[in-house]
Length: 366
Ligand SMILES: NC(=O)c1ccc[n+]([C@@H]2O[C@H](COP(=O)([O-])OP(=O)(O)OC[C@H]3O[C@@H](n4cnc5c(N)ncnc54)[C@H](O)[C@@H]3O)[C@@H](O)[C@H]2O)c1
Ligand SMILES: [Zn+2]
Image (tube, rainbow, N blue to C red; front, side, top):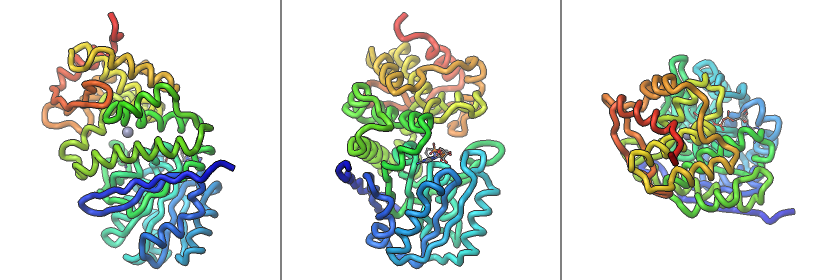
């Protein structure tokens, strides 16, 4: 059996301090770790019908062993269920379980479960605590940290939600072995983004050794912890996304447009990767990035098995990008890489954005 790996990333925010624990064989310790960090009467686990059959029993047993009263609810998996109906059902189940202000919600699953359970916790009795137990790569490196929670409306994704920092995050990398290969690779999109955003060393390591689902768990844990620290540093400086937190949108303005124009057929991380390459090419054409930057990004993205471009008509991409909910006034704040490990934010008009999207469709080296 491999060594036990443990990484702890402390997070300090204006509203709460908490630890993100990343490692192997952690699921059986969820109860003890919660007991050590938090006082509570009951734990209410929210999971989905893919994750629950694999891991719910172990988490429930661990919580009971640690002395928590335990109740659970299982939702249908998938973004299409991240809606008001499921949200309402979770809240009704929480009330039926008799949760009080001293109870804790435990989100066991990917980003969909984490966002929905987090929002339910933020709403129940005007806000109780949530512990995130992310089981997908995306939720480990991104959605479980930072305190954003949300559900979708028919008019768009994540249109309602709340800020609720988790009280603890426990990421057991062993869970990644059961993730579909597509979902695993999808999560790498955000990992590459973090490297380009803030960490050239992480980027170079990824480029040389693409993340592998069956790779060394200790190394995976280290890389996930590094990603958590990057997100922590950005969020810590701007919890409510008024300024620097917007840099986490690197690759997302165009990536979201790919996602929407594909009718959400393409995974978010795949779209972010392609969006990142697209904005890097455009930025280099315009002289905003160090020469060679987009080439390095493309190579790294391709090495992970992610797309460097997206086969969607540019007019559709431009139309979607112009509707981005993160629009600011008459334009958008676009995050562009100046080099690997550094970004800058540029406010561009919608016309400039359209030009940029056309530029990004050209190859970097004429
Ligand atoms: N709150 C934030 O800051 C933030 C940031 C990024 C993304 N998000 C949200 O995260 C969501 C996407 O997250 P996701 O990619 O994890 O999607 P997901 O939760 O839908 O998980 C992907 C699929 O993998 C399954 N799964 C998860 N873990 C598994 C495991 N260990 N073994 C087997 N199957 C497993 C799920 O049931 C699902 O079918 C989106 O709704 C997005 O809006 C939120
Ligand atoms: Zn994202």
